[in-house]
Image (cartoon, rainbow, N blue to C red; front, side, top):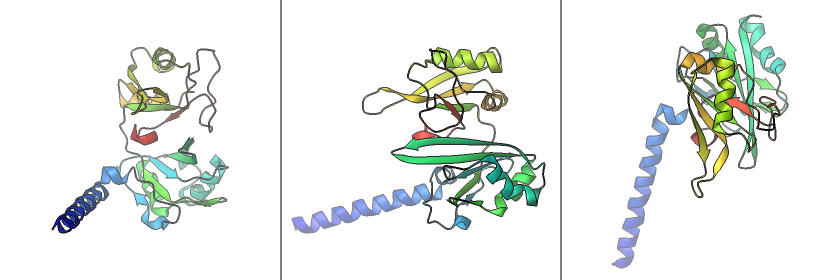
Length: 233
């Protein structure tokens, strides 16, 4: 009887776990955070969270990805003026290198056409993750910061570049087990327009005065990212 009860309990736990996983898979916001493995068919890894966005996000970029390689995929089809800017965000998470490209197109219609073209294929591998960035966010992630960077450094940095009273808050990420602060945080701006303006600025420097080198891989001092960064912070 005890053995039968244990089997029923295990079966019930398994059913609950499968139901929970199914709920996560069905939610579009959750799907936007899931990164498919490189073996996934690129055609099944497309996502359109926000149809009015002009920014296309392409993940799983090879280490040596360049703006020219990305642009060569789209400009011949969409036109020489289709792309306004290409930004890379690189990081090492749990021992794995990750590189994502943010491509800003001239219009939302052009971005939609680019999405329909599928992920680009460039030397080093097939990019298997592509989606449009949801516009209107008021937050910017500041990643790979020097350990001497404080919230007041970040606030003063962006206030000087973006404008007075532009920064509403600075939140540093902390480890769940120890509470120790980590080397990335979220800067909340007074408006989405100010956040977008901040993305075009250089990252903050440390207390020693060494300027950040932008979006290169660690150990560069700092880099800027859009929301939805490390561990969903």
